[in-house]
Amino acid sequence: MADGSGGPAIVAVCVVGALVACLVVAAFRVRSPKLPGVIAALALLLAVLVGERPGLGEFEPALGGFGVAALLLAVGTALLGVAHAVHLARLNKAG
Image (cartoon, rainbow, N blue to C red; front, side, top):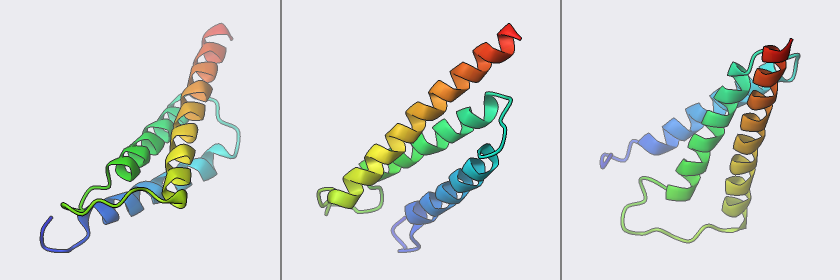
């Protein structure tokens, strides 16, 4: 978006809001692997947004310390979400 409306930033803020909402719901008892799967997908999308830094054009500064920390946290959240989804799928299948 060349009009300066901040398209990728708005998308990222919406994804963060959705991720926080899902994490709040997941703080209580989760019985289905769907919610951890959604959490993993949203976290992976955030990792891609942080890693690719869309909307910066030709000037692409290197990630600073907080950017690297955000990227690692997003990837870790995605991995934990996948592991939790697999665990719940196996648990539901067995019982």
